[in-house]
Amino acid sequence: MKAVVMHEFGPPDVLRLEDVPDPSAGTGEVVVGVEFASVTFVETQVRAGRPPSAAMLPALPAVLGNGVGGTVTRVGAGADPSLAGRRVVTALGGRGGYAEQAVAPAAGLIEVPEEVGLRDATALLADGRTALGLVDLARPGTGDTVLVEAAAGGVGTLLVQLARAAGARVVALAGGGRKLAVARHLGADLVVDYSDARWPSLVRAAAEKVDVVFDGVGGDIGLAAFGLLAAGGRFCPFGMASGSFTPVTPDLARERGVAVLRGTPPTAERIRELSRAALAEAAAGRLRPVVGQEFPLSRAAHAHAAIESRATIGKTLLAVPR
Image (cartoon, rainbow, N blue to C red; front, side, top):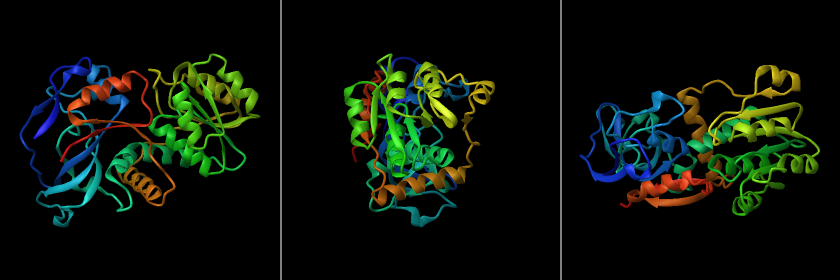
């Protein structure tokens, strides 16, 4: 089979399409014929040799890729034979997704509703559960003003939709007119370009108060967004697109009367529950992932370069020809 193999850490062009042996399913495992593979910002950091944690560095050579969508082609001993032929999405523990076939634990498979395409299902696998978990944590509702950072990103586009559906007023932060247009189309009430240094004062002038901040950027932008929260507000950090998390100390949060909501690490079953819920919302037509970029498997390096350029919108996927 074909897979994108990395023999060294470095720039995007260390990702090369190669022939590798077909995988086989072990006990309790299946082989998935991959149709789409998710590409994430964290994977670009791993490829460069600079992940958030050194424990994320793989032994080389390695095939990156965590989330995939496809059809079960082979079932190993101890797994349900009826899984063969089912359309599924699944996480792979961070390895093996950039390939024509991937081995996955049968227990971790999530069947895709027939109303949802594999493309959308793959885009929702991780981002959908993240967005639903954040909304469940912050509980935005009617009368709240919710500020979403990186509102044109994979998680951000979903948060805009979910906060709007909950009855909240949504302030979307993004960089550049194209990204702002996406957030506006998804239902944001106010869009603000945070490449404009005046953006905090623009938000303050337009919004009477900010009740919830979904912080996917961190750094100075996250800290400025934290400063906009009213007393009793909820600050939900979930990303560090800037390169560092927002430096909010417990003392600062207490002084401002703001709750910092991170939640507890979810169990494997809770993760699957949230992913199924995201697919159910998509099947019902209430949640739509934005896939802004799709590259063939052979152009995985181009997908990484696009993400690093900060010009991407929504989710980035690799498409595997069948």
